[in-house]
Length: 136
Ligand code: HEM
Image (cartoon, rainbow, N blue to C red):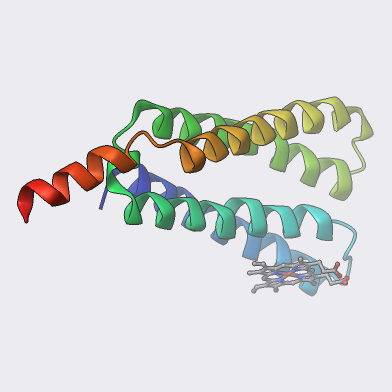
């Protein structure tokens, strides 16, 4: 498995554990006020990261490109800024954290644009087909 896929999957599992923790906390306390943070930890942190990891595992030539690691780094720095701030904002009522959530969200959005560039770019596709032709 390419390194970037391994990293995406390992980080995804950490987010999954945190997301489930936030879900259990709501279920046990009966206070569901932080459900948007729980939903984003699970969907951006766990589900989307696992999809990214799967994509790079299926496209190893693209996974070797430097931009894949930039995508991984920017996405996760964005999540680390955005998700705890979103949770504290909803759960503890720290509304002053809104600009922090916004800054993290913009980094996550930028990382998604980088992923779009990776997907639509023909770099990596050519080298993969050249490799399979050479090994035939
Ligand atoms: C042990 C695991 C989980 C527990 C205990 C849990 C618990 C909860 C609770 C208590 C709510 C609030 C429901 C409400 O007030 O309407 C909620 C909402 C939500 N959860 Fe989870 N959850 C778990 C796993 C997951 C996973 C794995 C995902 C996604 C991959 C997920 C996605 C969502 C979403 C999207 C909502 C918002 C639904 C809405 O808009 O009402 N949850 N969860």
